[in-house]
Amino acid sequence: MENKLAENGPTETSLGWRYSASGTKMEYLKKYAVGNTVLDIGCGKGWYSIFLKDEGFDVYAIDIEKQFEDDRIIM
Image 1 (tube, one colour):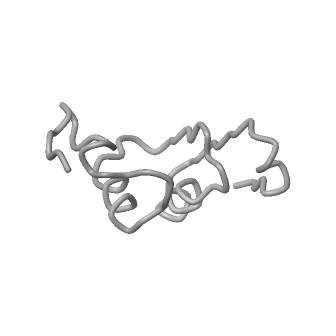
Image 2 (cartoon, one colour):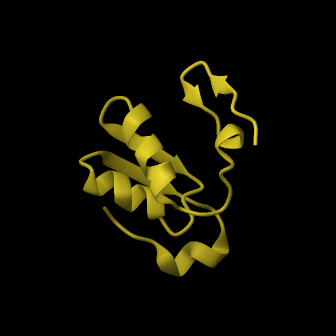
């Protein structure tokens, strides 16, 4: 795994992220989040949206995939 850092922190590739919510990802979000409003584009089932809402952020989450139509949540 590469360990290159982007200008504002590690990249998704350098951290080896893909397809799952994990404690490491959540810690990264808390560390590098700026401001108090989040737009989660392609939110899927909303794992990150729910986590960030619980951390006190104002969250707007969208996904266009039909498979998530029944999983919509309102925050």
